[in-house]
Length: 316
Image 1 (tube, helix red, strand yellow):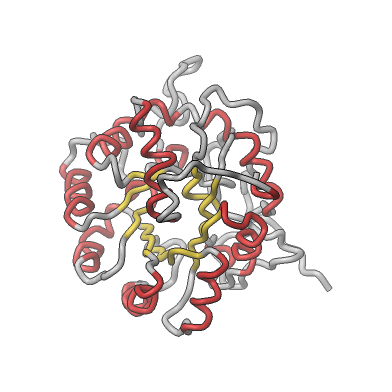
Image 2 (cartoon, one colour; image 1 turned 45 degrees about the horizontal axis):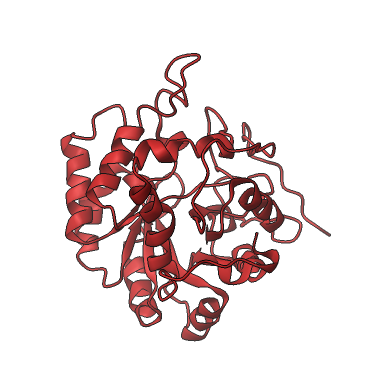
């Protein structure tokens, strides 16, 4: 019998009425951070999950790619699926060479399983340090896994908030694979990008040559998408932080939709409108090309970064 899943109270579904973007992504653009949820009838959610989402499967992601003009995707394992990467791997099979994956695994993962995931497109492993989403500090698991994935050329993705920086700093010194940091380390955007806290974050990123995603203004904002009713600007309080990261780390910044936007509490953005955020933080064509095409291709499709992108089949 198929298990049914009731969404978490107050859950906001993603906006399926995407519409036409005002900003045109460059040819070959990569969405470096998105998820798939289920569908739960086929890929049940993990019993230990902290939230129960709506369904958002591979066919929905394909529709998003077509609507936005995204050529390639990096599908990040969602915490609602725990360490069962089946839904993410199935989506990688569906999109083929135009998708890469970031998995969630434990220190007991074997070489054969890693090899299989590599063949299917996985190139990284994510570790979540948000206490409201994980029960235990994953530091030791991270170090054990990092030692196993090094031979495959994978990286680790870290998701944390500013209060975790004292713990993250010594950990970075021990990680012997590339590091990618989700959502700019979730800065407090009610401060300033020149704050001591954000400066410390940027200093660590630069010291350890980490990559940074400037994604999720909808998750970081304090004012909402528009600071004033009728305003034409978008996420004014987040823009200066992302712009500073783009300026200081032009070759190590990445962008992603974070579709289907899990656990938002205040509003659900329209993904076509969200694209308007990109030219505000990457102001030149050169910066946008690096952010959306060259950087993610270097990290996830090395050897293909300088080739003209060709898409086919079910990829779009």
